[in-house]
Length: 342
Image (tube, rainbow, N blue to C red; front, top):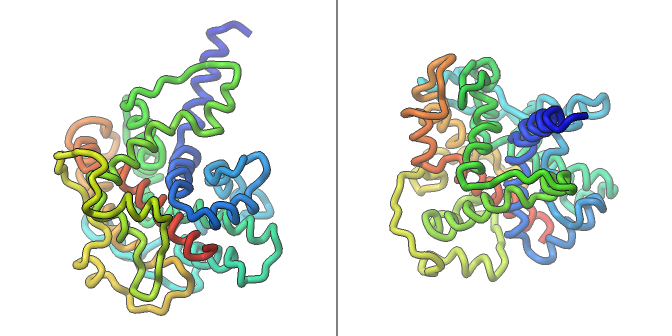
């Protein structure tokens, strides 16, 4: 095999690996891992496969890999929610129907199955951890909570000169572009598999997001995981100090626009007044996430147009919406696991 042919294969491999189904889920799990209580980290480690080396992120995309296998085909409908009367950018609604097969009920189900009080066997709880980490990630990709054009899978677009879909742009290409813009360079070394699968290549992006949490968003982070007054989420003492509004960790005078998920106004407007069925509250979180489909995702979308530049992309970049969604997901994964296993 000549070098040019090998190079083409590697490029195809990279394009396949850098997808939200893999990298986005790993990033959220990597962020979550940094906020786990020591006791919870050890509990999670016990439920992880040995080749994960105690890291949460290698299992984050497992649910995508198995959803088309005979054993787990029933889970394919759990990766999204269909919402009648949902027609972004004109209207964005979410209806939570207990017992329906969708991502909201899946999160409740696997939260309860992971609970030590469930008395399920080891593999059932290990399986629940895999699904829970993944479905919490899916929930925070706005097109997983929008039914229009099959969640954007049928919405044709162009991104950086390549024909694609709106769904794949939000699943993959935005994250890929942002990682590249941070200056990450691929290295074709002998341990290429380790470079991709053990996480170092996205760590600069994770550090960038953590820095945003310490600076631009530091007064919001503690509220991201709030469901209601009855649910308490615990973070490590180190993290509590990090998230104090008056803690000065970095100087940053950049006051760029960002969306707010858990402001008092949003809580009052979107409280569903339903009895929580688990320590997580996806039906609450889904509402403002779905509204992003009207505010950003479908706004200014024109079929078969270039979306990696111009007003569409500039709004995404200016608001740091992709980074904030990844950050919120990581915090919520950590909060649910800390509350459940702490």
